[in-house]
Length: 195
Image 1 (cartoon, helix red, strand yellow):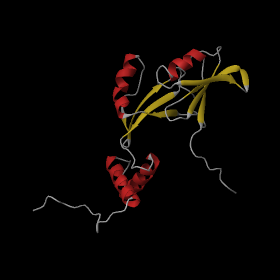
Image 2 (spheres, rainbow, N blue to C red):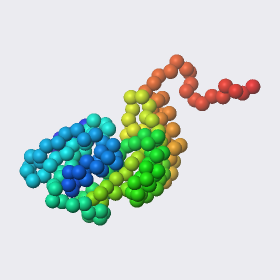
Image 3 (cartoon, rainbow, N blue to C red):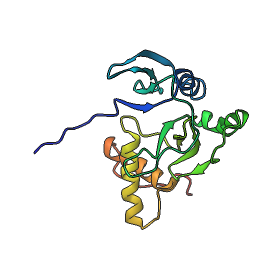
């Protein structure tokens, strides 16, 4: 038996309401360029809109002009999508509360998740959206996932409840030590200020 090794998210497709509501939210609120439009090839009664979330991948929306906006919470049954999270820069995240408030979009307020800051709000159809901003940059050639895996190992070894900034900083240091050689005899912390 062999795995089917994936290499990233290709796209996510959501069921939307009408075309204009989808465009107004995904591009008009979240800033995702509307890049591709065609019929749903499996159902000619639906449109299929494509948006670029900023990393070259795709968010696609099935639309139907007969479907109306319903701002209830999407189902939370097993197997249903709980929420979708999008990465934003620290500069954009710092403006999120103000910009959501200007639009009268109800939100959770800023949530400190230890390794990132988050804010939650619903799209016009009740899907929970998270905007997340990492508190760290991975070392050159590494990914956020690699840093989080190493931070998790450090956190568990120390018996801590959740990942915090200290675990991230120590994980980054450890990854740099593993990936980058040195001519020094020791990589231990030193004090060049002592008398």
